[in-house]
Image 1 (cartoon, helix red, strand yellow):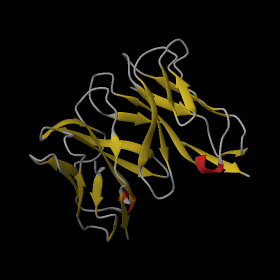
Image 2 (tube, helix red, strand yellow):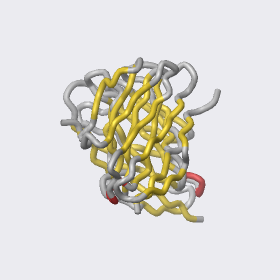
Image 3 (cartoon, each protein chain N blue to C red):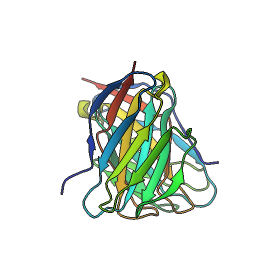
Length: 113
Length: 113
């Protein structure tokens, strides 16, 4: 069974631009969550989608948004990029909501210059 | 709110040494607890989990027991190998039933010959 895939793996942008990251969950998984990983703040929860609806949101500004499609694939968008948005963005999928385990993708490394 | 506290790293051990990485948590309700491992340049891999008090999670020689009375979930391994060198994250799930994970800061483990 294929794992969680994220595209692109690496991205370089400049301040003020916007970016879209994509995540394809494991086949059959309906929940997708996004996390930001930085050396200073560690792993922080961005948001969770289940059945195309945002179920939970972390403490990030409105520049960070996401969506989920009917095939469970998810995208996250960051507008008006700032230097501090440079991070590894990780996507995780889960079969359903609740206490089930989550499976992480390899991440997208975003560098903002 | 929910939080996870992990021992600071890096932890440097000789091969075949005993490993303990401490993890304590604060949460309302009854979360599930997890240990994830991250190898350089990769995403997170689930190492083990426990869903209720006194449960013991185990995998690849690693073990951790969910201790409600001490709010702890310490990771142990009897004999580490060089290939265990990685960053280890303790995490707890959203007691409210969602898939949001709250992570500790991570502990880097270096195993030397």
